[in-house]
Image (cartoon, rainbow, N blue to C red; front, side, top):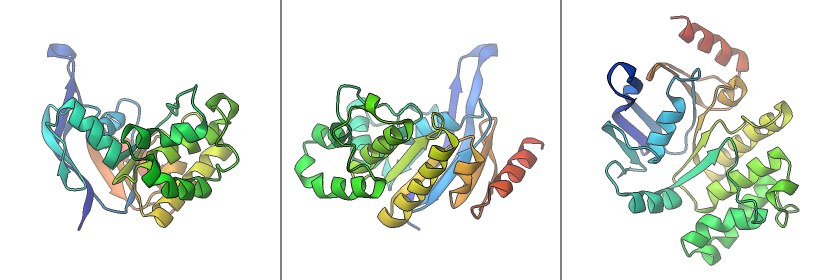
Length: 244
C-alpha cells in the first residue's frame, strides 16, 4: 500500500511537572494514498495537535512522521517550510487569506514562493473551475462570502499539487448550507483530482463525507470505522466512544 501519511509512536506533551498534559500519548496512524479520512474528538482531545504534528507545524517529543514516504521528523525549519509548500496543502478554520491580495493572488501564492506560477497555471485553471471561483478571482477576501473564502483557501492548498491536503476544522466559520457544500467539494477534490485528504473536525456532517473516521480521546485513537456517508452512524459511534 502506498501511504500518504504515516505516524509512528507519536507523542507530544505540553507543560511540565504536575501541569503536564499529554496531548498525543504515543499513537500510530497510517493513511493510504488517495484516501479521504477524518479525525473527530472533543475539545482537548489532541486532534488539532495531531494535525500540526502530521504537517510538521509542530515537532513531536517522540515518534516519527512520514508524508508520501518522506520522513519529515527532524527536518530544519527551512526544509520543513519548503516541504510543506510542495507536498502538503493546509486548510484552516479562519481561512488565513492575505487581505490585500485578490483571490487569484492568494491561490497563486504557494507557486509564487516556489518560483513556479507559469508551470502551475493549467492546474490552477482546473482547480478554479472545479471550485466555481471563476467569477470571483479579482475580488479581495473581504468581498467574498465565508464559503467563497474557504473555497479560495482550498484552491490555494491544491495549487502546488500536494501529496496530501490537511484541513483543521474547515467548516468552523461556515453556516450549515456552506458547510455541506464544502463537504461535497472535498469529496469531489478527492474523487476527481485524486488528492489524499485528512480532515480534523468535531462536525459529524464533515466526518460522514469521509471514507473512514477515527475518533481521538485523551491523545489516543479509540475507534475507527467507515461511516458510509451516514451522519447518524457517525453520531452514534462518536457518542458510544465517548461513553466508554
